[in-house]
Image: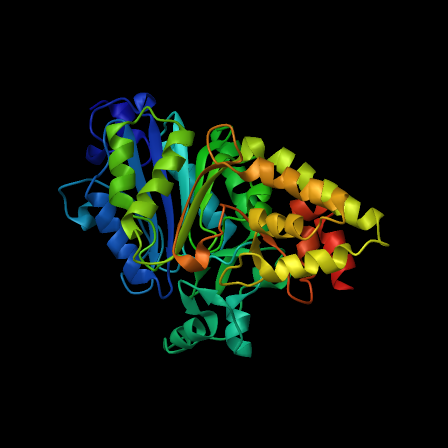
Length: 428
């Protein structure tokens, strides 16, 4: 091994003697396990080791746990003890809710394991676009669902962890959007703006134009608002409309397919993830998973904005009645403010025979969402279970009553009139 290779950050015997420039993929997993998902994180690391890295695919993980010691960075290999895959110890008190930690991990991985294409998976709890602070919710005793359990129950579980203070990280005072990567020790999480800034900074500093794939191994993240927020950062975004089972993604078949076919692009890998997830759970649990193409999102947003414009420009028409009934009938998820976009539009169209302008615009959105496939916004989609039978891959925010004041700060709200229409229809 040459002296230059020895000096490369993260390099060493674990990397082998193949040139880093020839690597096709680096698969990065930012595992925020300092919470009640910690055990599932350890299990997922074992799943990854069933495949392990290859000369063409580097599998790297940062795992912040609650009880397994300091935060570790792994270069995952098959046929070794997990502890021998540790290539760096970060700190004893890493805060995965700090955007700097995410940016530093991405930048480290890209510099230590350069590749032609990069996938980043954010692994943890997720709440869609919403900014709600789960730790403030714990203090209030209120909540929503995540990982197939009501958040009130989740909060109760976390409250049993001794030594948890009521202090909140300062970043929580300026929350702007949805949360992911919850860190129970630091009482912090990544909000939407922080997540985007962290990824964007790492891409800029590494000289990487975009991620080939951004994955959310988390709950409720396959939303139009979320994908639009990260549209400039990744070619494909993979996530679930519904809450995910605690076991999350099946990493063994996903990474096995990538190692077997390292020349696949982000389009194929995103479809592999959706297919592997559906196959893994089968009919055992109601699940959703979808892959969305950032390149195809603009026509969707334009069509949604066109529908909003029609409603706002015709206040004399009973659009509020039609849309209100459609909303109550549409496919919803564990967070009942999240509706399947296709099904919502289908319910609107069914009730709009006397409003042809509204019907036409709802059907235009539907035509852009179904069927899924190459060159479409919904690149791949899977769902199982009767409760989720009308899922089509992407959700949108339609609150039952009051609107979150933070919604207007999202890019989607700025670039469309969806929030204005919601204010009008909800009488806010």
